[in-house]
Image (cartoon, rainbow, N blue to C red; front, side):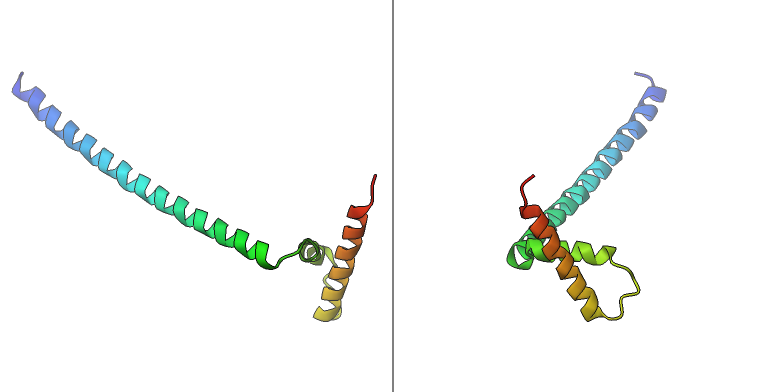
Length: 95
């Protein structure tokens, strides 16, 4: 093997080692993010399971569609739940 070939091989080996280390660091970071995401999803499932009914969910959706010129928050909440009740009633009808 020539001296020139050895000089080229060493930097390539170092570059390959560096690239592998960077990939390992990236993969550890991705794994950590995936674990955090999984924990947040589980917490969200628990929160939803504990206190949000379908009626609450419908009211929240309805609240987003109501006009912005509603006089006060109490009226907004009342109208939202009224619409949610109407949605539930309609949902209960058979086609």
